[in-house]
Each structure stands twice: as C-alpha cells, then as structure tokens.
Image 1: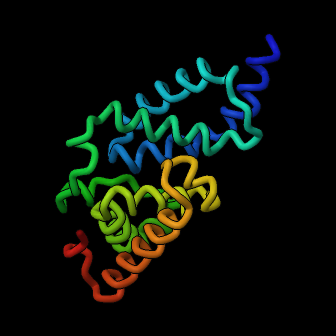
Image 2 (image 1 turned 90 degrees about the horizontal axis):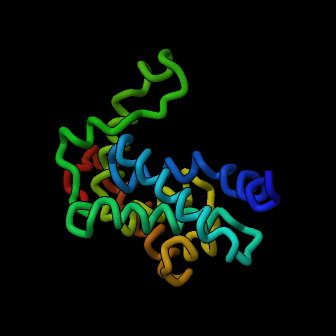
Length: 172
C-alpha cells in the first residue's frame, strides 16, 4: 500500500460512522445515507492529496453535507417530515430490553428532531451526536461560529419547549 492510502485510511475512515450518522439525519433515509457516504468517501479520496489540515473530521463531514445536497436536491432535502415518516426514523436504542422501556420517548425525540428546520437539525446532530466543536461545525456548514452558536441555542430551545409541553407537532 502506498503512503497516501494508508494515511487516508487512518485519518478519514476513522470518521466513517460520523459521516453515516450525519448523512442519515440529513437524508432521513438509511439507504440514501449509504449512497451519500460512498460518494463522499470517493470525493474525499480524490481531494485527499490537497488537504492541508490535521483535523480531517470537519473537512470530511463538509463533503458529506455537500453530497447530501447534491444527492437529494435543494427542494426535497429540507421538507419537514410528516408524522408517519417521523415514526419511521431508525432508533439507536442500545438493546431490545432498553428499547422497550423508552421506545415512545425516542420516537418522540426523533420526530421532533426530524421536524426541526434543517439548519437547526444539522448543527444539533453535529454537536450533540458527533461531539464536534463550534469551530468544526462552522467548517462543516460554512457558517460563522456565532451563527452556529445561535442555531444550536435555538434548536435546543425549540426541542426543550416542545418536549416539556408534550408537543412536537408545532415545530417549524
């Protein structure tokens, strides 16, 4: 194996799960997420020789985000889920026993997250599920750090308000 391939596998493939998670939440489809991640990894491989950063995760997730937009098209990408689609989102419950105990809450949270406007949903997924810093999220989204922070605060506020009210259907 050549040095470039070893370096790519070491740096980029370590973030494959994060790439899939972001693609799944943005596309709302596990099948589409598979295709998106495959395309993103191909693009990343082609551009890998030009990367001049040690933190590859934001760079890779920005490629995933762009592939999502390309794959889904502008119009279809940002449409809110209806209740049936929100219920069909996959659960990440750790075990069947635990899943039985909190399935309703998880479905409710997934539904609420799925109905958030895309700009709020993506920063929430990157921060809370992928544990990325504000700076890294800004790199992925192309938004200023202040915008990332305000979107994240607004997303958290919307989720909290609707969770506490027992709602979720009124999310924008």
